[in-house]
Image 1 (cartoon, rainbow, N blue to C red):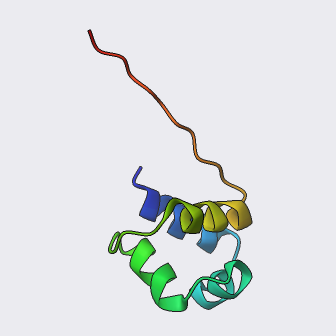
Image 2: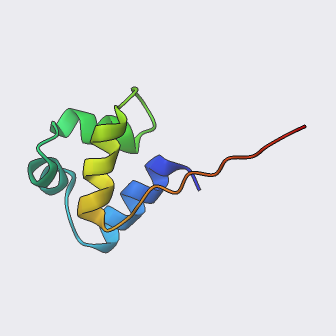
Length: 66
């Protein structure tokens, strides 16, 4: 699943509007909308703020190829 879809789905499940999420994270509403549309290039700090409020976390996977 794409991160933008995950954020939108979780926000909806928690019954939060985009404006609610923006206010809670102190991120602009335009940024939240862009992230959910898969647009823009948000910083990792912005993504972490959103995921923290939504009760999600980033899992890094490193694949080694030889």
